Length: 88
Image (cartoon, rainbow, N blue to C red; front, top):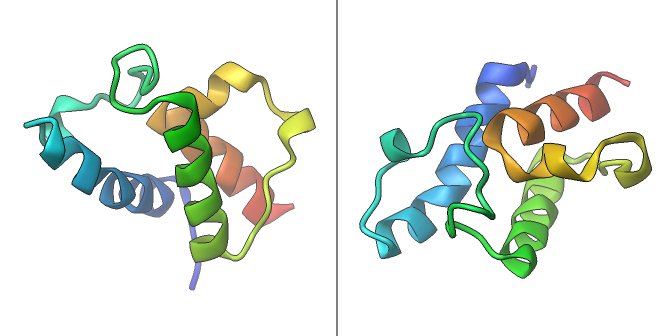
């Protein structure tokens, strides 16, 4: 399967759905540039769990040293990091 930023964003949003539902939110409530940690959607442990789940789902490992840590806190940033890893 070919992955681009749009399909990766969809995967990220799908992975976030259970947490959003618990919070009474929908995917539409989370903008691509919104910080998932500062907004309270995810704490640091949940963020690492999400990244691990996506790495397994997409069959790729992120290089944490090649990306700014803040990039991992938004849907847009996560998608860009995964697309970069998938196309490397």
